[in-house]
Image 1 (tube, rainbow, N blue to C red):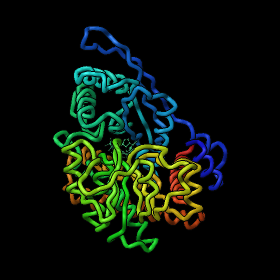
Image 2: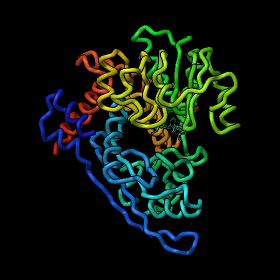
Image 3: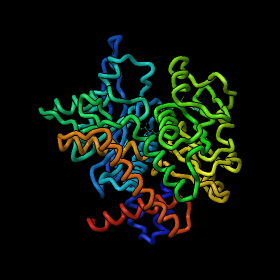
Length: 405
Ligand code: NAD
């Protein structure tokens, strides 16, 4: 992360002090808190909230529950949020939080008590005008509802704007479940326009069939008539050159728990799916799946990053040289944080939009952001990731400069 900021800062001619400020988190809170476990013992959990940068608006970023959460990872992820919110030009900064825990080995009651106690500990630095958390790995609407309730109880009044990703009944936004995938297909649409690709009938491969990957299948097939020929999940992949229909594959996944063994398809590994000869590749599962070892074999014309960090630093350079247009995560999967921003706006207004309004506003945001990144890509003759960082770092640096020290 620091390498990317250095690179962008130097290209923009920023002074060393400004670059240093943008590489450092503004504030870090480490919390150690007790939780009563089901067996009657008390366990102390460790958690973090890192606030990276708020030059452009209140901090924003998810909360992760995982045994491997560590402070350096939370720092890097908080910085990532700063560049993501700046790329799509929403008036928010970047933050991230996490608790070192293994929720898969905890009961719902233990997770609730841990969540409420963590919320109470970090309540001193979060709030609708200060820092607005959201879901991340192993957290979702349920945890967001508990955090909102704990924070509101401490304040003495209802504070839905303290957190996003809430259930609809508590002020969650319509359109949020599909927002990341919708933003992703809008980015692919913009890329196709500029590269002369006709998305109708274009072939698509999708790695990862969870929230992002499965909805991307639905939207690219339904809205653009593209032909998804391969998809995969953690258990393996399937391919059918004639096309895989979303409704059928999704029904199979719901029924069997995996896309594997879908009738009429052939199996394909999670490595091989990335190297298929398709027009559009959508890595929507894990980070670091396209590396210097396989980047040279990627044959897609466009690779849209639904996942965070699927392409390594070295792989990026190889794909750029080979003419693969990579749509970087901080642009391509920013639909989620954009609709989270809309959720916060609706909470603060206490006035709620229709799903159509949410989707239209998202389309506008992503289309403008894509154009801004594309303009940087043409101006600096660099790949789209470098262009997005140039744009984001410039926006944050400009705001910081106007504010002064
Ligand atoms: P998810 O848990 O709903 O789905 C993940 C999918 O990846 C599952 O289908 C799983 O089976 C599959 N998977 C796991 N290991 C795999 C492997 N080795 N090979 C192939 N597939 C594998 O998660 P999600 O919300 O869809 O998130 C996917 C990615 O998108 C993550 O990188 C996440 O950080 C990123 N992302 C998500 C959102 C969002 O709004 N959900 C927003 C921005 C970025």
